[in-house]
Length: 117
Length: 110
Image (cartoon, rainbow over all chains, first blue to last red):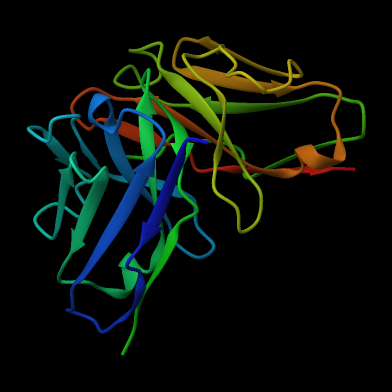
């Protein structure tokens, strides 16, 4: 079964950092753009960041630009999201998703990030 | 990067139909035929229901259909079933941004 599994979430203090991972299995990982999407408690889905299949192109939502970094290791079938300068507004479930034909066809189960002192 | 506009809620009786709108601009919904729709049940991951405005992935019932006119896309769920009760989100490709989600609609099956 095609699968994405996120990890790395947790409780972090304001101003802190965290690195999320998303491990892919059972598909040709290097052939797809990958994205991160988040959902804050009581709020809707928000696209956060995306990376091209070879890692040469990265894009970010304005709200996280200059604070978050996205990268990937195609040999390990894993995409990463480095979160820094975190605020309470970054508290959310973070999902990774596969991009197929300009839609997100495969999603992970999500990993919770809580920013609180 | 303003979110696409969806009604906060929609409802219909078992077996009836419900239609959810998704309004954007000429820079997103109106500019590309890359509108997709997602269903999300509580504490579950989102699920792709419609892509490229009106195409259904394998395994999605044909009760789900999508369309677009100008800057507004729509999702129709026909023959409502209890398991259709969920949050629904539209999404559009928007060029350089490159993606924007809708505000979300909670569908209630009466």
